[in-house]
Length: 155
Image (cartoon, rainbow, N blue to C red; front, top):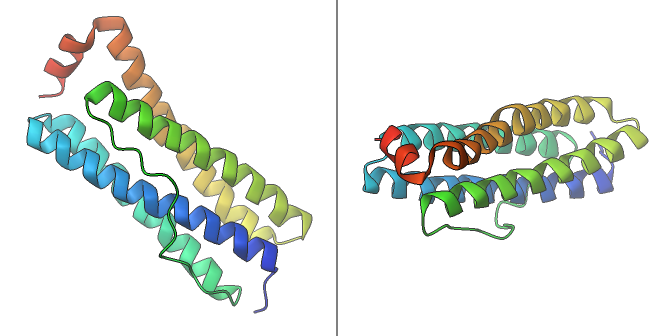
């Protein structure tokens, strides 16, 4: 199927962000594992798996639309040096992905590509309702109970 070039380009932009998220979550999860924060390791490793699923859906759609997935492109990678910075960096990345998803959803709708729109809506729901929300909760917990208590709860 010949897809809209602007939609394919937007999907490749989203793919770059998802691949970056995979890399960032991978490094952060390994840092958590190395430091002994097993709960954070498990959750962030799970998030990495979710991002792999997002990237897979984007690649499948790009191919279906007749495009070539650009798996070499990445957005800015943000590796934190401590737990609060890692969580903040991951949240910033999720906010950027949500903004890009909303723009791509509007584009897909404007060219009447409702299947792409539907796929992107599912990714947006996961990004906002699961990933970003959980990260916001963790930063809120650090603020409410203090960093040391939070870190102790993650062992």
